[in-house]
View 1 (cartoon, helix red, strand yellow):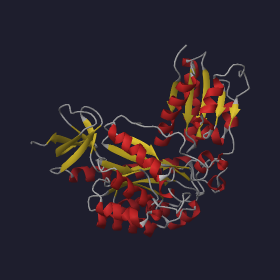
View 2: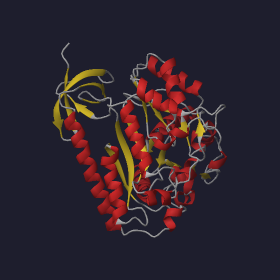
View 3: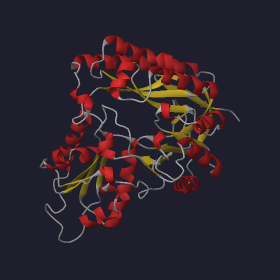
View 4: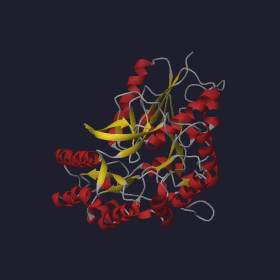
Length: 422
């Protein structure tokens, strides 16, 4: 018998939850199993999930093959119909010890547990599966799950459920343990991170959590927050950006488009000028801050002029790191019923956005030459600056350490760094 094999597709939160599932499966004594943690964000993600399932079945013909994750939650019937699949479990079920214990219980074979996918909207808790130490060089801490918003293109709320928050005290205790283990950087993650706290007593905001962590864990060198919705950035978060040097000056923004009509059709909560105003304000408070963003290319009804507004947003917001998503209709979403653009047009616009993003990143990196950065080493010769740019060294450095380095130039889309002389 062999230990379970895990395959993770999609977001960092999925990777986090895979680590939790490894602990649950080990505690249950599960053996000779393959677990695929799927993503549902695009039609391409579904295609990749099916492809990965078929590949893993070929590689492990005698194993129990379990499919879970967002795609399993939103389309359980799709995976249950695949002959390669033994069992399908939902996003809530995958985090429950009882689910894994039942898989090893005597007498529960065949179709007894083939599909276990309940109503994700009824889930109210998210703190039960917290683990310590996910990540080799920085630690990722899930503080929130689910989303209360219903953007017209997005299937994720139906895979993750409504927004649930981990209480601040639980988060702080976990981060203390991570610092004690030697982690120099912690990243707060969630599905809708700026939704943190709305379901907790007194309804604290994300900024309150950030300030509390930095106050109560003084030995934590670096704190990051993952993707946020800028329209929901609260006053305490802006205060932290302005006054807390241990909060890293890099924010990834959920923008999605730069045209007001498309933003309205997406059912976003901000307009173009709101995004620009946020970036300008944050940059005034923290001049060294940089921004990444998600942009969707080819949303239904998008004209060339509307697309140009998204393209111009890169300069108007001063974006540095761009994640481009060619629009992909998801069954069950309002956007899937809107007039669609042709595939070649969508791909062309995505390519133009990526090219513009690459140019902006190259410009940012070139501006770093001659500067000094504190680099968290992710490998012997590669690490990340405070702004999350990759920096490479010509000699080995201790992994997980923060190195003071002078930037001497660029190599492709990386900075060339040299350890600063003592």
